[in-house]
Length: 466
Length: 168
Image 1 (cartoon, each protein chain N blue to C red):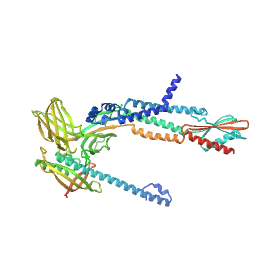
Image 2: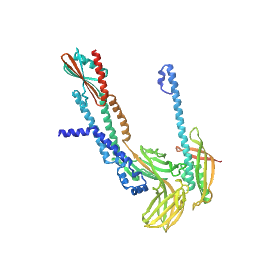
Image 3: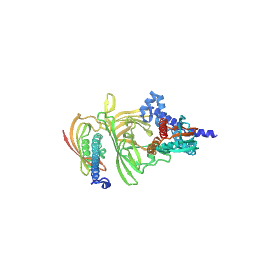
Image 4: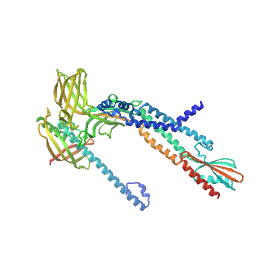
């Protein structure tokens, strides 16, 4: 039983196990980074990839770095590392306590065991001990002596500050990893959609998608938010490629009773009451009005066009069994028989609408903005075009803490490096006509450097003996 | 006297002079750097306001809907655009325009920071379309202007209040 517990303890506190796990994590992330993440693909690209390379799509869907990082394996490794680090710190404290109780004199496994033997004539053990002590004192090493007059073991050691540096680093690591745990359970990501002119009070029901939610629930700022305007600026020579997206939001905070405008850009988010909203995506939002033969409005709403750079989408009017394919051309041009847009600026706005009742196509026409057209028995009106944007409420509590604390933890590593765990053992034995001095060294990390130190010490004692 | 640390007074006079001089220089450098950075930020804001105004103007004329200019103009300028759109509508036409080049010549802000002017050189093309069918009813014309935009700061952002237009 004792052996099993010892083995479990060794496994859990093993630095090598932690290193292997970290390597596993790194390899998984590296592989995941090369796989495509379908979240970032458009619907068309997804379909294309599913057809062209189904196995790659399958792998990408399951093993992309995003899904790996939020998976159970990562969660388990994170928790294991926290436990391991905590127990490793305790293990070190136990080892230190044992060392204080006299274990320091038992040579550690890593000791070079390569003793250097010197013999001195006409001298007492106590004199050599004194020279050894002198040298250790000069080096500001701690000296411990054990043994009798004729046979003494003197141990010079350093690394006390380094030891506590190491403990500090371990505890900081636990704290930092706690930051990750807070992130794991407390992070949130949710999206909100706005059409220009639309405003509403931020409430959970308004969230379009909740991708992540803290275990203690998601709270929203007590504010009303409205999208005043959205516009994009495009490269002069590439009118379809935006160089800047701007969304102007008007915010009214109920508690503070104040209203303010904010121009939100890609890297300049909207922040309300400490909650961050990132500008995520957008497109055109067309108002579609459909009247039946009696002039009764059967459909009248803004439809956010989500495909093809926010210019196309499908619309279903269930009560009428109508399905429409709507494409919007903000700057319409005709190339042969093809309809295209010259830019994404509303300069020459046209819609191309294909309407089906069941499977029967009953309308297929190019319609200018703000014109009512007869579509079968219906009257189709496309009176207005606006823009919609999606903003993402994002919170990653614990991540900033993790990075700051990790940085502070480096102080511990630094202390460990400048004050490493090193020992020099001097064994003095009084023989019949001489004193034999044998020295051994131990260094956990810098075996080469400790040899130089030992030689320096031996030379010093030899010089002092004369 | 330096605006820096009062402990300078505890230094010997020679050192005080030396450090005091250095502090003054540092202060001047900081103030200048801050002013330059502030000016650069203000200039970018003014340029953004004019760029956005022109972009939205193109859309307002093409839709036509002057209300989309609301965030970018003062009430005066909004009324002016509204009147122009109304005139086009009575003539049953719409303007389709394209800003080919927008060059900023200079910007200046009033001392109180509430008004500003931006001088630009612009090249446009435009044509008119029928307001119902959107069929082209005139040929494409090219035109170049040198404009002076007069801007006001309203609710924390710049809006265009008036434009002095000079055809080149």
